[in-house]
Length: 319
Ligand code: PEP
Ligand code: MG
Image 1: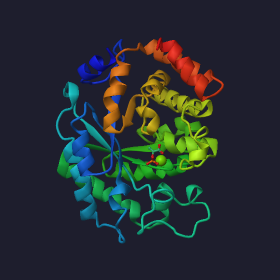
Image 2: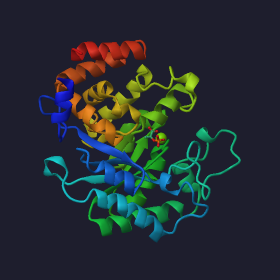
Image 3: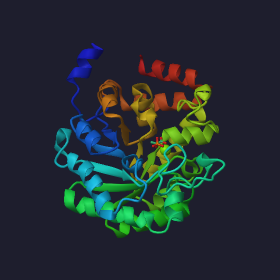
Image 4: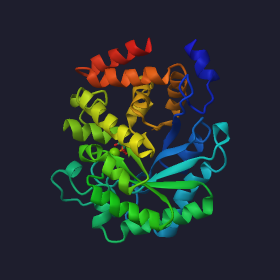
């Protein structure tokens, strides 16, 4: 029966009682975007731009960058499942730590995960962010697909405001990623200065639990089902609901069909994931009610540990 409903599910995604949930794809370049555009998604929720430039010694020019970005935008031109227009969320360079870029990353840091990475690097390198935003705006004008732009590793409202101002000046929608606990705690203030938030659960978990996301012997801590992480996601989603602005999840947590139900129950409006995960998540959401999702969210946050949280959600959803 699960196989049959998986095959039959074509999107757009909604809970059994019709609460819409945007399912979006995580992509790295034109090739992965074209592959993802065949999935029942309403666009891209995370385009990791730094992955296109890992082998570059010099910063690509504005024109070179625009070409790369346009390839991804073009893959999503035209309507998605259900006929609505699709959009692409372009993330500005998340260089540093686990994704070093030769032309940008500092090499002499003692603790790169807590160092000058993501938006911090864009701000410390004169013109780097401006040139990337010019390239994204240029690509968006050529492609005719709506481009939203978001920054990684934002820790303060002042950073969000400075970023938002630069993006909006170019006529684009601005957002920030919630990857640092400080950003989750002040999500309501972040939303006063940007148009949307996107929760990066991989880093949010790493920084909440003070556990390296690459350390395999810390897997029990780097688990997005940790109740502390779920609390921060719930705070962020609630801020979005109050502000009437979109709050998505784009970390690995969004690809877990069980957790996806709890995230929707918290008020998350979109889930972005590897294209292969879209159908299982969409098919699962179609079987659960939105009130059940809300109950699942509360049960997960109240659980003592990740295993108990999973059990509680299964129980509430009757799985
Ligand atoms: C995240 O941190 O959850 C995220 C989506 O960004 P990345 O995995 O690229 O750091
Ligand atoms: Mg991240």
